[in-house]
Length: 181
Image (cartoon, rainbow, N blue to C red; front, side):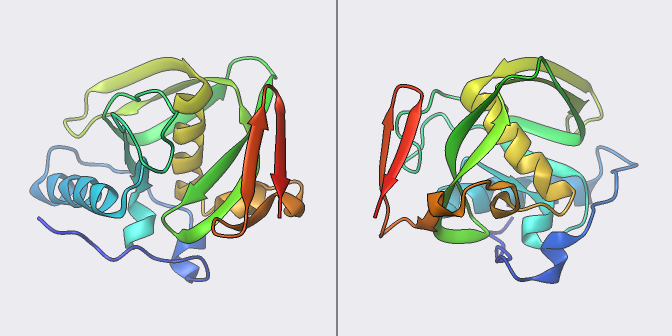
C-alpha cells in the first residue's frame, strides 16, 4: 500500500460531493482504506477522508490512540466508516480548535454538535452505529464534511479565530476560547 498525496485547499476536487460506495469487500476498497490509514499516520492526522486523496467516495477513517496535533484529546476508536449518516443528539454545540491535513499549518475555531449518533458501514459492509460526544463527535463531523465538499474554514463563524499555527497563541479556559496574536 502507499502514502498518497493529500489535496490542499484550493483544489476543486475537495469541493465535490462524494458518491456512495455500492460494493464492499473489494480489493480496490481495501487498498483505498489501507492507503488512507497510512496517509493519515504519515501526516500525523486524527482522521482522513477519501476526497482528500482524490477519491470521490464516501469513505473516512479516524481513530487516534493519541495525537501530537491534539495531545490532550481522548482516544477515539480506530474506525472505518463508509456511507456515513450523522444525526445530532440535541441542539447543543461547542466551539473548538480544528486543523486539517488539507489546510496545513492553520487552525480555526469551529462550532460542532456536542453529541451525535453516526451510522454507516465498515469495509466488509457490516453496519456500525454509535452515540458519541465531545472530541469523538468533532472528528466524525469534520471528516464527514469532506464527503460533502466542505472544509472546516467554511464553518468558521469568527475569522479572527483562524490563522497559522505558528502565529496563534491558543488558550482555552473552561468554556472560553481565546486567541491572541
